[in-house]
Length: 633
Image 1 (cartoon, rainbow, N blue to C red):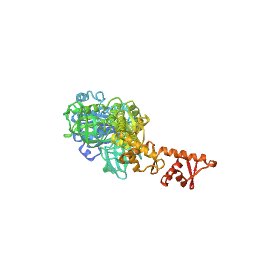
Image 2: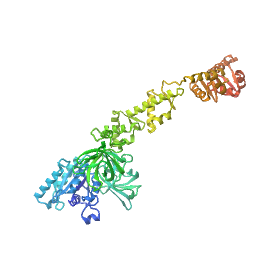
Image 3: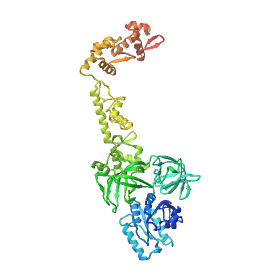
């Protein structure tokens, strides 16, 4: 059996609740006030098995004052019963409810002409004509029309058959997707604690699942699940469910919240959207304050019309950005209703094209062009996601945000990633980055390194952190590291702590070349008794700061070698190694040893130089220390 959620829509006192009661045997009016006044004030729920479907009925209020409650119930339905009383025909709330269902993209429906026992054949025929005119060109244009009487039972079997037929054509909701349940009721039960109800839009929720209630990021654990009033291990997409939640007080959850798998949907305060205005509505001006209804939530927001247009005309469609006054749970492809701020009448609807826009504005021509790229289109969202990533530049989009931003379930993310590769979207660490800005950043890094070489020819490269701060300061480190790895693999860059072009060789020029030669001459002349700072300064004839800079270059080039705190010319160290090795060949039996005293005497040096030189010979495996002497190897 499959699951089907059927909602009622229609004017007050046209028999919606009575019809649900006649079909299910369950009274959806649950409040004392509803009983007393004879009208539905809150959402009502009932259920029945019809054909091979488990049908959950959502009965909504028809009174104008309660349309916002109606909106909280209609968002999760698969099929609508548009109810028109045969003795009254189409009324104001009939039209508004119908507009809402059409704007929300409800796929299928049935027109039910109630109170058939109160109207003669001629009146029924006139009502049918009125309804046909109302639904002309809409999703209900070819819907079955059934005359019923909840009092006499006339037409109920035909209606059940129509529900079964329509239900067989309704697509199954994605049970394998992340869980998403908009809350339409929240209350406390003695012995259980917090209980919420709603229609499971997608996914599966089971006992012991750890979920989150958004907005607010309240972590909850599912203690119990009921489906159609009976305890169950789990609820699946398309079912009406009641959840007993642990970890949250009833005062912290309410209609408008969403129970969901953590990290799977965007919680946002601005959306880019495609808005359709009803033909009978007044023009919607740029900057207008509106009421946005999605799922069970109602949030106030202001509309910025893309491209600089002053308004959206009645019956027209436009792209816009809506800045919400409170956070809302939305994803790409979600439909919503727009109602005027005052009076709160339905004026249009829309679909979310980007739940977390990063492009700076939409009023300019460029902003409109950028927004055009993210329209809902039949390409699976590839162009839209590419545009979203392009707008983020070299910072890229976190992989974890791809599903919520693109409005695709986790099971489809890998396929989307493969498609993005054809659009030159590359992975940089844990981010997805468009190829063009990544190439620009790579070129800028190479240019910065080249400029550093030109400005500091004696340096062996640009400090790594300096490069990151100048080009990748506002970019995740993972992107910077990925760019470096790619340039090194391409042999366009070398180095670790200092970055350099492969062709770079630290050099000196002009007057610094004379200083370099003076320093080299001083250390070469000193041999194993290197010169002091004054001698080097006198020979090089340069300030200490210049000498220090050139000496550092000579050390990097290994022309000079630092042993402990003493600097020697590399040629002097090589001659020393050769001379000590020669001792072994001249020694009787080929065994030669050296101690500190003999070493000092042989080379005419002090202990200050002898000790670092002997330790150098040990490291170079020319000698090996044994007690107080060293054996020549």
